[in-house]
Image (cartoon, rainbow, N blue to C red):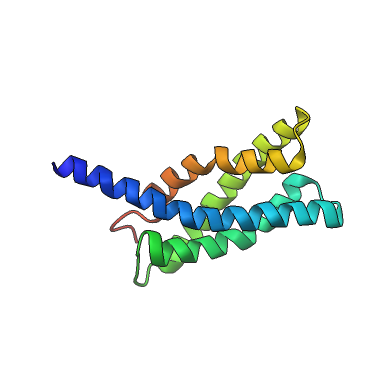
Length: 135
């Protein structure tokens, strides 16, 4: 029974995490397309710029809402989250470039790269950034 309750908590947390990730994905997606179309930046470069902004917004969301962490360790969590975001960016950029190279349109490639890497992002955030007792 306890294992079932723990599983339900994780599913609920993933759904709430999805809300923050959706917020970040909207920032990433719309900003990437705007920088690509408006300024001619390559999609991966545009995505990198937008992820700096979205990662900060999403960290605050997860810190206060998803994982409800508090205390003096927020700066350490923020640094871990930004390092994780750099890794997530690298994974997304590789997937994005592969999809664009396969002649997928930039809007579809950006969306696919964001969605495909989201499970890795949740798992890593849960374990390495917002773990209970993690300072």
